[in-house]
Image 1: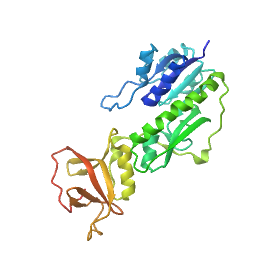
Image 2: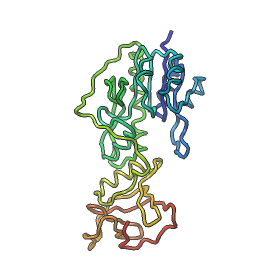
Image 3: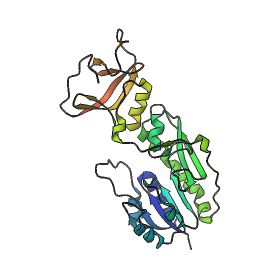
Image 4: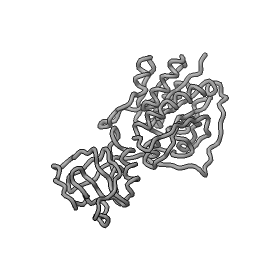
Length: 300
């Protein structure tokens, strides 16, 4: 009899890992996932698609850690718990239900970039390499012992979506390498080095606000970290909001060295002063109030 797997997951990483288990004929007793959020742009396949194709029960608790849900999950009698891009912290009472342990696949090379939105944060910080990590789940987010990880190189112009697409196959390959060991209770575990750990919170649309005092490279990294399909970087001109979907670092024109950051240096196309140079705004969108006519010298 195959061990009973309770799968927590969301996003396309969750879809691909659940699909692997189902293709192998593993006994996935249920998928615990999220309802799609109103207003969120769903640009990825979700594990619910794979589960429903194979008749796996799909559960969508608003809060999985309530007494009612703990009881319901305990009644499923899982042998192993696997979490892949599930958006809630799973309490220790649930983690303790599985005799073979509870395991998570996280979108970074732990111990760096623990927490939410690790790929976006890595792109924002200009990281040259990202990856996926399989680790034991404990009572602290992304802090359990590492079983396996795999990384890929990032280009300095990759957007967060391009980074996601590059790193996505790593999760399935890691799970394929380690699932037999997980089910046998013999997966290798190596403690994380806490001295190297970094942790980041979830990102909100407001975090896309551009601070023109920053260097051009830092603003460029912000733009590529949150550009479409994410909420985007933006700046305000009075009551109007200018979404900046792409830009290019550029030198300042002669005679503008003293212009304050945020100053419009050229109007068509928009060239804006930064803390150490300028950015040429090559793909933009006005939202809210009617688009103002931005003249040279206007302050964003």
